Amino acid sequence: MNVKVDNICKSFKDKVVLKNTNMFISNASFFGIKGSSGCGKSTLLNIIGLLDKPDSGNLYFDDIAINFKCQSKLAFFRGNKIGFIFQSYNLMPKLTVYENIMLPFMYLDKNKFNSSLFDRLIEIFDIKELLGKQSDVLSGGEKQRVAATRALITSPELVICDEPTGNLDSNNAKYMMELLKEFCKFEKKTIIMVTHSNEYDSFFDDIYVFDEVK
Ligand SMILES: Nc1ncnc2c1ncn2[C@@H]1O[C@H](COP(=O)(O)OP(=O)(O)OP(=O)(O)O)[C@@H](O)[C@H]1O
Ligand SMILES: [Mg+2]
Image (cartoon, rainbow, N blue to C red):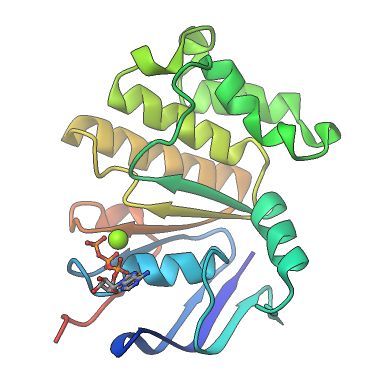
């Protein structure tokens, strides 16, 4: 899926956060968004992920404008077309790894479950040995690999990641970047990732850098 951000503006009370923001994210690319703390990265990702709406401007998925007034359509997109990976892993601590990965199918059509994708993700994210474990005993790196698998098991056209490496040490962070890149290239999905770091530039196909906060 390609994504176009067209002149999007967003303020909170009198604080202008996004002012005529524009970008184009090509289908099947690994797209980085960088900028200092408070510049509006998460605000923008929340809009692209349809968790918030812009004050003005347009968002296009595959050249079709999103109608932010149509709640049922937004919910359909969020559930079926978009996967989210956050800095905090948001796993259900008392459920096993397998149960966490299967959570999306509590509200999605069970027929959407694709066992060959499951097998590929288990392999890519190297979590076969973890499937029966309770999630709260995992390390941070393991938790994030499980969270990523859960985000991708629905085969979303667009994956949105807000600092997914933020809580990981540098080895695990690099490893996660490699895995996301592999998923992007093999499954031909679009990944948009916010990061503070300049370390990952080489992974990205394209990068948007926010201006310094005034
Ligand atoms: N719901 C909200 N209500 C009021 N202000 C908000 C809200 N969400 C964000 N802001 C403000 O908007 C600005 C941008 O926030 P945002 O979370 O997008 O920054 P960020 O670039 O993601 O920062 P960080 O790198 O620290 O995560 C900040 O000044 C923040 O305080
Ligand atoms: Mg943020």
